[in-house]
Length: 220
Image (cartoon, rainbow, N blue to C red; front, side, top):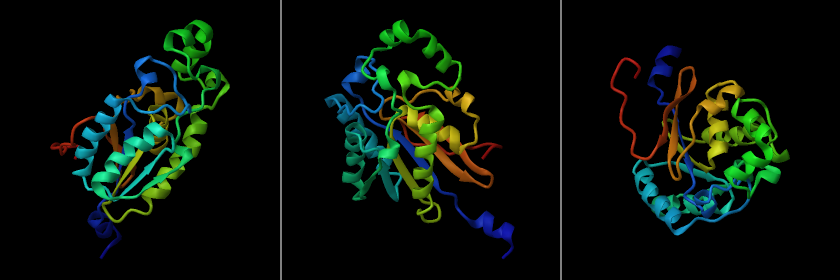
């Protein structure tokens, strides 16, 4: 068989990057960062609903942040699939120093210039914490390492946090860091799907909350 034929016959792997369920700090619009905040009852219900959908995709492996909100979300999918969850602290949310625990309004009032620079895509250590590129440096290799263990056509579910997922997607699909903010945020317990193509990873779905539909068209 030719190299081209082998490539055509190979089914690409799939990554599902799933954000945790709702926390009280989400409701209060407090910047969580790496603070270990647990799920609300509503957040747990979100995780259970989403887990039923994601279980139907027959994932092969689950890896999750070790923070409680992500670990509890991952546990709902593990309970349905029987899969073991591997926890990795490298999948934690961005450490944001003094921003953590502050509301959106408090951050703008106290650190307005820093906040504006971050939104412009400039490299900013929010609250004296991590750069977004540093988050990608620690999280993306973990995702790739687990993806490499998948069988042909296999699916990995990564349970993490909104900022970490955004930076990981940006790194994996080759966007320049200043453009990562163009990837909109994820709602609680929504997910993004990356598929492996001939030229690398492609973003197939973003901020999804329902099962994926096939792409029927010229871009399939």
